[in-house]
Image (cartoon, rainbow, N blue to C red):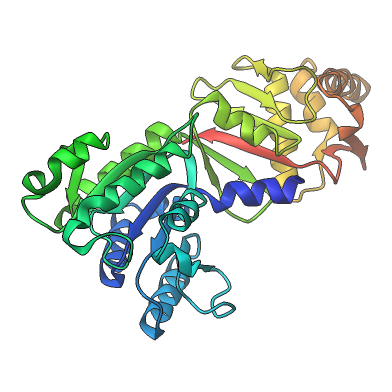
Length: 340
């Protein structure tokens, strides 16, 4: 898998996934997010289970136009909406197809928010509508190492007495069912808190024009580093971790706070992401050489410093010198990760 494919795969799966079968309720939820926590929308996927038709197509078009970073899978005609994911018709009729679609939209360790009653799923008995909870349990089991968290929302009162035992038997806490009337007071804060806690990293790359949320575990970061040549993680302690396919050794390199090396890596990668002309040799040398140093001493200090940086790499040619500046080679794929 090359860089574009790997980053596309990461971008297709979102930390937050919502499953709902009514256009109105989806619109209401998205409007609440836009008003209270717009930063969550680019990290959200919506599985719209409304039946196909002009109303569904028009609603999906409005959502994607209003919130371009949103990812939506719905029963829209192929080719009508470029940004929408065309929902497999079998998702309405076969539980395996439904679970496969949903798992493909959710990042490992993410949060699945599902309506407790999905009336358009023909395989869920109408008189036992709460059995859709077992679909969430199935999806959770499709992520053996980092299973998602599952929450439900409902506009039905007294759900504890109706299917509280079923929720508990499926491994869910009945107290975690959120009423749809509590979008701003409960649901939005729940999603915001989850993303901040479970996906604390924002990853900036030159691909796709969006920032990816990255999970807190080492496995989450390794997944990113397997897709990029260089990733500089800027931690809350002002230190840096350098990882990626181009870094020598089996472990990422930790750079203590205040080190010149970390700042130079940050400058090189930031310049690359911005499509810049490189980091001037003189600017690096002046940061390292004593005050009042002559130009020759300044450039020598920069050269020694870059020799150290190149020694960290499997291929020293990843950093090139051009027009009195240092820059990353054009084929290098890099990213900057920051704690949100």
